[in-house]
Figure 1 (cartoon, chains in turn blue, cyan):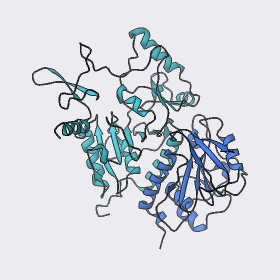
Figure 2: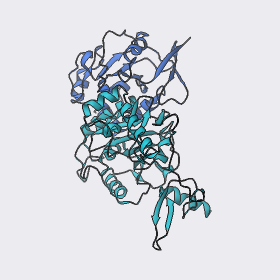
Figure 3: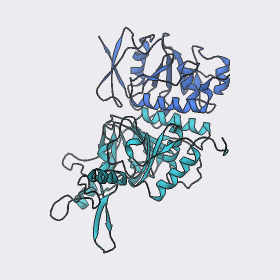
Figure 4: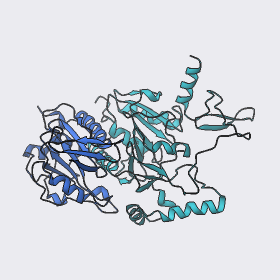
Length: 181
Length: 285
């Protein structure tokens, strides 16, 4: 049986979950039930042959790529980049241009968990009423360091999505992240 | 599906493209994300931009409210609602704001405050606030990127010099998150402050101009003004300086429409018909 993530009903519900996540950065949202990791569910919801995806850490199998109708490209040219959070950053994503900042990449990071990590971060910015704290597990610290560089000149930048088995947490480029000592 | 139409009319590829653009619109508050804007079975300019957003968002468990100039019963709202009901089997529709999960609107933000679990979709005829000062879209895109709005401010200043007043009644340019200036669609000035720090996500869809933009919840939204000429909303005072009331529900706080009744007398009533009816229900217990 084909997994529900390839069905329009799942993708509609997952998309609403994504809208909620990006509207309220730092909030953990749970995707509808499926047999797949939430990162794959998100890609199934947003990607098809019209878009582009990089898979530098080889997290997708051949069947996923066939159903997504994509051939992975280099991270430097991809609209979506799927990465393992424990690995260090070793690429430069697209940041968009001044006239077309929407061409900045979307980074989908696979983590161990979205909370309970050793390091805590405080978030502020649009979508957050006052502040929110997050403590993701399985995220190399190079990601937020690089993110700060990539996102230093608004409107250019990257939009992140942290994913666990079933949960998602969004960090649009406008969210300011501060490590809490 | 029995009637041979995909759920929510659009094919899944079209939805995915709108969904990708919509996510970027939320990530870059106020930026007009281009999208392909498919042909819809109604003319562009009849709310196809808002409609495509609604169709990309809606699921069978949604309750939809469609309003036009505050009214659920005007022709644009009725036609859009009928179309969505026909192509989205299983959804519920309502006229009561409190029951709705998804609200599509033309020219008004509902009178009562939106909740965090609601999404407002506004239909937009002209998405770019800079179009009055710069005809070239390429140049406008650079100006937006640099947040260079000096020429727009000069236009407002010229208004003050000529008329002692900024003469923009609706589509009031509003700065989002301190960077992009948006055309908030033809909502009256009265509605502009509702964009600021809203609990609900507010989305804008321009079908003919093929643009999607967003004001996320809890986001800074400042109508353009000068230190010595602050932004002000419509004045509904009569000649004695007293706030006019709605002739039906008596509300003295709502946005009012002006009519000439059959006797030729000028009368005022709430523009938001759902709010007005709820006020009347309250009054009659």
